[in-house]
Amino acid sequence: MNTLKIKDYIFPIDTAKSYIKEYNQEDFGQTYTLWDVWVQGEEAPFMDEGMHSGNIRCEQMIATQGNLQSLAEKTIEVKGAYDYVTDEHLFTFYVLTHNGVKDNEITFGKIEGNKVAVYWKGVIEELGFEGDYNTNVPFELSCELEIKGMVSNEDYHTPSSVVKISVGSTNDDIDNNSNILEAITEITDNHRLNDEAYDAVIKLLCNKSFLETFEGDTDPLEDFISNFTHFTDDLTSPVPKNIIQKAMKKWRKVEMLENFVDNVE
Image (cartoon, rainbow, N blue to C red; front, side, top):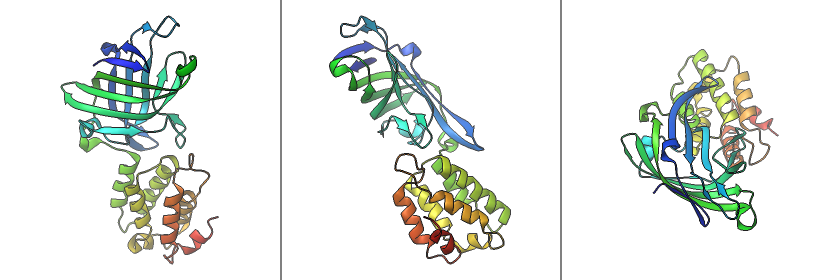
């Protein structure tokens, strides 16, 4: 416990400087649950390079896989080192420079007071030393993190959960529905959602009662479909190609939407 192993070298972890902080913050009018994580290694001999220390961190990363309460005694995976949709780093590792960390597998233990045990392994994309310690360097750690903040299950929010709540708040009022569609457009333009949230959006635009509120002005519907179905590549496009294809297949069967879908290139 409380050690960081980079391939064959072991560093003690400075538990006084290591923590996880979970909190809510507003982003473009929506509130999301974020993580700040810092795991600080102490100095130790490394290769023939003298004494070195390193740290693993993330800052203001949206906690898309769950809040701390829901993740106790569970394992999450964060495969990529970079979110190309939001244009932000996820986890990074610092020794000589900041480097991305991929193939993360993080297991949380029980929450005891203001502490949580974490077991973590992954791959440092570019450590910058010679030989096996240059690129794709494996690491693993076990440590006890101080919890500097925690969000309750009731207050936990992600882009996906906000979209699902928004879909459930539609009614027969044009202003309400316009505001909801505008909010969903903003979210789906800037974040990748889970399949459940995408299904909710697809079904919403097949809902006759919802669509009828836009009969006097269909521009918001056309704008939403244009944005939702815009695809550049697998990495940077917010909406995955398979979701776009699924949506277009269903929306083409809706009389009020068929012309908008047919205009999509």
